Structures are given as C-alpha cells and as structure tokens.
Length: 213
Ligand SMILES: C[S@@+](CC[C@H](N)C(=O)[O-])C[C@H]1O[C@@H](n2cnc3c(N)ncnc32)[C@H](O)[C@@H]1O
Image (cartoon, rainbow, N blue to C red):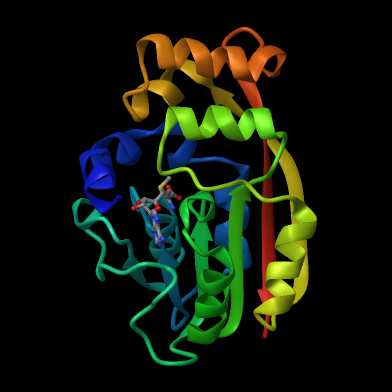
C-alpha cells in the first residue's frame, strides 16, 4: 500500500480537490489553529491540511505510512508513535476510507489528542459506488455512513461537538487519472457510477466532524 501511495505523491500535491475546498476550510477552522497550538495531521498525503494550519500559525507534525509523501513521521493511523495527549488537536482529511481498521485509528487519534479530533471524509452512497471506488483504487477500504461515524466517535470516547455534511463537486477525468485508472476499468467505474455523473462531474457527499475529549 505505502509504495502505491509514494508513486502518487506528486499527483496528490497537485490535485485541485485536495488543495482547496469548503471541507479543507472547515477542518482548519475546527482545529482552532494559532500561535502555540499544536496539531497532528494524520495521513497528510500532499500536505494540504498541514500547509493551511501552518499558515494559520499552528505548530504541525505530519504522519503518513507512505515514505514518498515526505511526512515528518512514517506511521499508520492505527498505530501512532506519540504519547497520550501530545497534541492540542489531531486531524485527518480524505483518508479514513483507506484505513484498514478505522475504529482503532479513531481511538489512536483520540488518545494522542488533548483537546479535539477533526475528521473529514467522503460518506457512503451505495454498494455499487463502493465497487466503483474499489475498482478505481484497490487501496479503497470503505466509505462510512454518518451514523457509523457517530458510533466511531462514541467508541473512541469523543463527544461530537460539530458536524457538517455537504456535497463536493468532483471532476471524474482527473479523479481517474490521479490513480492511473484507464481503459476498461475506467469505463466500468463510469458505468457503476451511472447517473451520479453529470457532464463529467459528480457530487461527492462529504462529512466533517469535530470530537472533543
Ligand atoms: C487522499 S490521501 C490524503 C489527502 C490529504 N489528507 C489531504 O488533505 O490532501 C490518502 C493518504 O492516506 C494514506 N493512508 C493510507 N492508509 C493509511 C493508514 N492506514 N494510516 C494512515 N494513512 C494512510 C496514504 O498514504 C495517503 O497519503
């Protein structure tokens, strides 16, 4: 898995839907960044959350299991190499659907946070859409429903303080190209997504949640 992601690092640094958006703005706001505030960015990928938090004055540490992402620490979300309550805030954006054990990961993020955990991810639409996601990218594990996310927070001992659910516009061609999904596989992905796609774009339901300890 890590090597696959290392090869994609530049594509994710350049990706428009990762570099900006209402979801990124909310994740940054809900981490409450500022001078003296420490934040851990889990599964940093192209580093967009970390960049924005640093611009807002926070001190940020990044983690990612893929060495090519160039994070400060190479680690899986399920096993974070930090002591309890090491950071004021812990964030992860657009990555939890790749985690092998999402509940363990949320518990780990809660463990190393002293104050708040902010998680943003795509949410479940249908089993057919899950099949499309897995065919596009074999590292896709699962998008979860809002109610599942609520239970993950509860299991991790986090009180849900904020949540916002909305659609992000996703452009299909660059989304397929970013992971090298071409030919018959790309056609099948489009077929599975069916009339969710309109004029080359698809609304992507997205959830941002903030839990406090
Ligand atoms: C789409 S990218 C992350 C995007 C980034 N957070 C952003 O806001 O632009 C997904 C990342 O999840 C990482 N990843 C996959 N499985 C993981 C796991 N179990 N724990 C932590 N990170 C993981 C990958 O290495 C990849 O860098």
